[in-house]
Each structure stands twice: as C-alpha cells, then as structure tokens.
Amino acid sequence: MSTTWERLEGAALSLARSGPIKDRLTDAYRQHLAQLSAEELPESLRGEFRACHEALTHEPPLLRGEDAVRATVRKMSNHEADEVACSLVRLFAALVREAARADARELLRAELQQTVTAAAEEARDKAAPVVSERLLNGAASAARHKRITAVPQVISRCAGEA
Figure 1 (cartoon, rainbow, N blue to C red):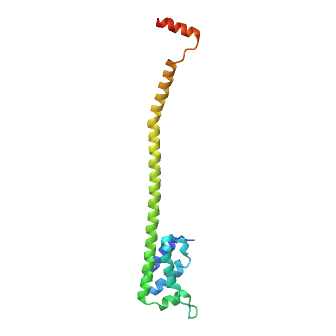
Figure 2: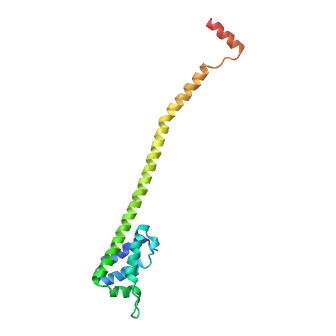
Figure 3: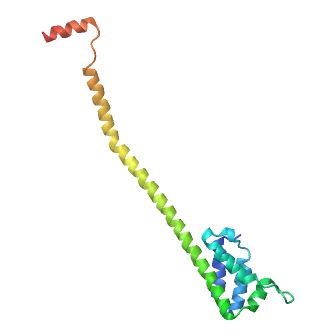
C-alpha cells in the first residue's frame, strides 16, 4: 500500500507525461487518487482535495463501460481539465510544503531538546566541584567547631587557653 505522499506524487507524474490532458487526468485519478481519502491528508488540504474529487466525479456515467470519472472528464473542456490538473499539482506541492514544515518542527524540537540537555549537563558539571568543595569545607568547619561535651576535653581546653 502506498502512502498519501506517493499517491499524490504518482498523480502529479501522470499529469506531467505526454498525451491529451483528459487522458492524463483520468489516469491520474484512477491509478492514484481513487484510493486516496481526504482524511489521509492534513486538515488544511482536505477541502482542496474534496473539491478536486468532486470536479472529477460529479457527472453520472451515460455510456456503456463508462464510470463517473470518464463521464466527467469527457464533458470537460480542455481548459477545465487543465485547471483541475493544476489544482492536483498544487495539492501535491502543498503536501510537500506541509511535510517540510512538519520535518522542520521536529528537527527544531530535537535540537531544542539537545540544547536543554547539554545546558543541564554543563550546569551540573560546573556545579559539582562547587558543591563538593562546600560540602568538604562544611565538614572541616564542623570538625573544627565540634562541641565539647566531655569533662576532660573542657579541662584540657581551658588549661590550654590559660
């Protein structure tokens, strides 16, 4: 099963080939767009896809072996067929831009996460020696200012000060 991107790309490539525009338009729809649902597209592109779908399928088949697409395209002028083909190519281009924006957002999100992680690691690495030094200094200070609680310590301390 091909992706939405591949289906629209296939339709655009069908439209870019040589031959009568109506044949290329019919081929693009039958081979690529018929399997595509508007819900598979980003919300911003669904309306244009539905309009293209409607423009290619609104006529009922009248001739034997004809489907709605063939009947609709048969009744179009070459100018109308050109306009629908242009809409389909613009739809593919819009999907490409939308995908590029999504990729850019994801890349930016990943870069931001890396920056935050690197900054946190740098802050931790800079803070570790300071914290260690403060802890050691605090322990040394606490050892120097240890409370004298035993009687012999009080006597020896007082004798030493005298």
